[in-house]
Length: 272
Image 1 (cartoon, rainbow, N blue to C red):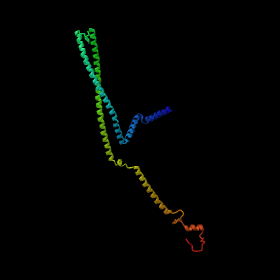
Image 2: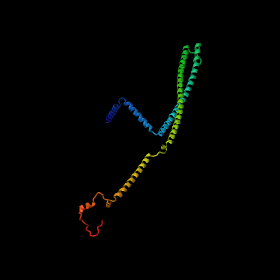
Image 3: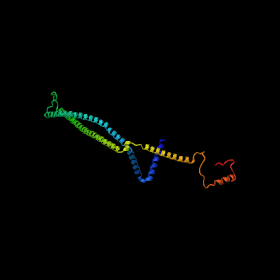
Image 4: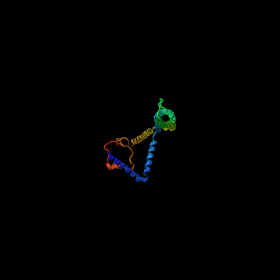
């Protein structure tokens, strides 16, 4: 089922792309891109500026956790650098001690004095072996010192960069807050200069009021016309009283209907 839906989606996409190509030719991608940017800009323009101000304030506030975290990382780095600096001092002192010992042993070898600790006399080979061993140890320690010095240099560079970044972030945050306050003040001025925004008149209520008035006018017109029609026609059971069409010969019509010699059955005066 999923494959079928994906297939239908791909077919629909292909048909849509084909229709665009038929309509706009090779310029179809440009039209699509322009339409996308226009829709996105329209959607962005429809967002309430107050909402954007709140969003910007939230983004600025989100800088604080990272700022605090980097301060702690910087503090740890400075402590590590201090300890490394102390280690370098200790290694340097050890090298100085080793150097003095090596020089003293070298002078003994040169003089042929092979005495060891406790005035034990050793051989020339043993003295030279001791001298070589101490020299190798000195060089190894010297190499370690150089590594620690390079590491300290790298740490100090990182620490200086971190201090700069923290200062820059702090300054930029203040600048952003200042700009945001300025934007909010400008927006308040613009809103104050537009009464419709401040008083918020309800256009739909005005439309309903107009409709009610128009309905009353129509109702009064109907009542007026009905009064005229009532006056003209009266009640449906009431006899119609009014003039006769002057073109009619009513007497002749009566004679034709009843005869000219017909008379009333009552014996008194005729009443019309």
